[in-house]
Structures are given as structure tokens and as C-alpha cells.
Length: 294
Image 1 (tube, one colour):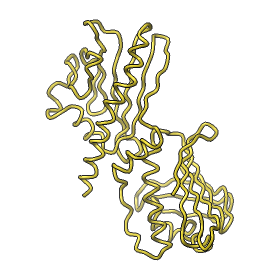
Image 2 (cartoon, helix red, strand yellow; image 1 turned 135 degrees about the horizontal axis):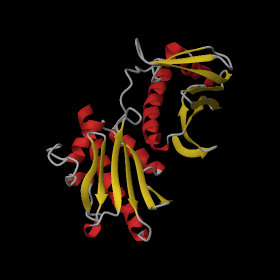
Image 3 (cartoon, one colour; image 1 turned 90 degrees about the vertical axis):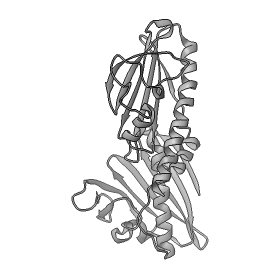
Image 4 (cartoon, one colour; image 1 turned 90 degrees about the horizontal axis):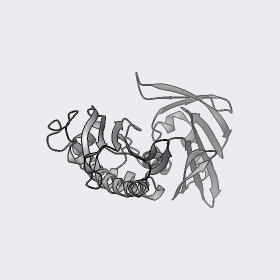
């Protein structure tokens, strides 16, 4: 299996190659016919099997429904479609007695790539079981360990440094594997409400020794905490933690640290320090997610 993430026309493209033991003619129904798709694809699918045909995705009775269109339909070689603005392509290439399946997903949300990759890997495992004639069973949530392996493989843990009109900004955006409340609880510590009030010093989970924390200036638990960066008792920047729903596999963390002109050394330090702060947090949450799934 070969997996990669690259950029195409300013968008992210996840590409997964997998060799299957069956020819394209046998695999084709499994990737195009709704009764087979339901056994490995993450949504219920209805489609008009032609270029320009309507394709509908739903999540069971009463669930949300979205509509896309088929952009390529060439049996038993190529099936492509759009779903909620994302582009999907499934290609089957004859390869001896079997075939090479080339799956690609093109999207805009780069921090979601590890979540997408781990989810599609589980789905394609189900597809392989289906064409092999083995029981497929219900789709399983991807493991936290698998998610974190894709973060490392795709280089998704690094922050971005930017110049601003007022100085500089360092920004990290990281998809996590536990829900918002669990992430907040881990950051806030054993007593989540004890110190998390505007005007108080933030809980240690939100801080780092290299950047002395002033008081909390904005708070909306469990999704937002901002405090002053205050070396030598003087506020010169802000550190802001935000949590949102992300891909649905866990919370999305955005950490933003700002500083004034003339402190480029601190900007470089922030890139390193916050990466080193976020990575153990992400690993801990992934391990907890896996334990909770057992």
C-alpha cells in the first residue's frame, strides 16, 4: 500500500494505492453499486451511473443528506464524483490476475488529512474484505495511533510563522482524536473550573515556562481561552487556544501566539516550544481514545 499527500491547484490531495487480488471487473461493482458501497463506504449512496448523474450521500434515517454529481464513469476503470465540495476518484488498473486500486480525495482542509487518511484506510480495508468474500462488519473508528502516524508522515504537526502589521504571529492548527470536552479537561487539569476565570492566571496546561503567562483576558469554556504574554510583568502579546468540532473524529485545536516587532528570536522559540507542547498532548489523547475504544 502506498499513501501520499500533495498539493494540486492549491488544494490537498490524499492518494492511496492498494493492490487487490481480483480483476477490475470483479471490483467494479463493489465501488459503484449502492448495495455493495453500503458495506464499506462511510455513507449510504444512491447514484445515476453516468457522467453528470446525480449522486446522493446520507447517514441513515433522519440523517443529513448531500448531493453531488458523477464526473467520470468508465466501467470497469474509472469512477469519479464530488461530495460536499471535495473531489473523489477511484481508478482500477489491471495488474496481473488482480488490479491496482488508486483512490484519491481532493480537499481544502490540510489539518484534516490525517483524519481522512486513517478513515479511508479503514474503509478500504472493508472494501478488500468485501471483494475477498470475507465478512465486512460495521465500520470501525480509526485508532488514535493510526491517526497520529499520518500526522507524522504528512508533516502536519508544524506551526506557521507569519509577519503582521503589529509584529509577528505563530499559528498551529491540529486535528485531535478526542472531543472538545475531553481536550479541555486535559488542558485544564484535575479541577477544570478552579483557575479558569477571566482575570486569573491560566491553568498550567495552557502555558509554557518560556513565555510567562499574564491573566486570562477572554474565556469561553470549553472552546476558548486567551491570556496575555507578559515577560517582566509587561503585556506584549497574546496566546490564544481555541477548540472546535473539526472533522467529527475529535476536536480541532488552533493555537495562536502573537508578539511585537524586534522579537524574532521569540517567534522562532514559539514555533519549537508550542510544537513540543502540543505533541505530547495529542499523543496522550490518542492513547486515551484507543483505551476507551477497547
